[in-house]
Structures are given as C-alpha cells and as structure tokens.
Length: 50
Image 1 (cartoon, rainbow, N blue to C red):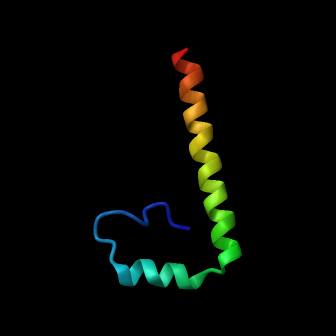
Image 2: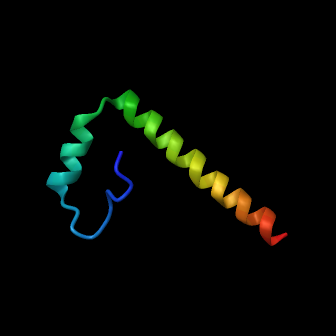
C-alpha cells in the first residue's frame, strides 16, 4: 500500500480505486501492519524519553 495515500491531492476517486483493488482480508493485514509499526515507533520514543 502506498505510504502517501492521504497526501495533498488525494481524491475520493483515487482512494476508492485503492480500496477496491484489495480484498477485505488484505486490507486488514495492511492495517494491522501499519498499527504495529505505529505502536513500535511510539514505544521506542517513550523508551528514549525515559
């Protein structure tokens, strides 16, 4: 999945095309991976600040 989906210039048409290009299960996998990366970053920042 492109990392710049919500960048300036995104349109509903573009977002809809991306949404329709993958299955629901694939979308869940991508969302879970994105959440994993986000929380990893947050936890690493918290450890560095402590």
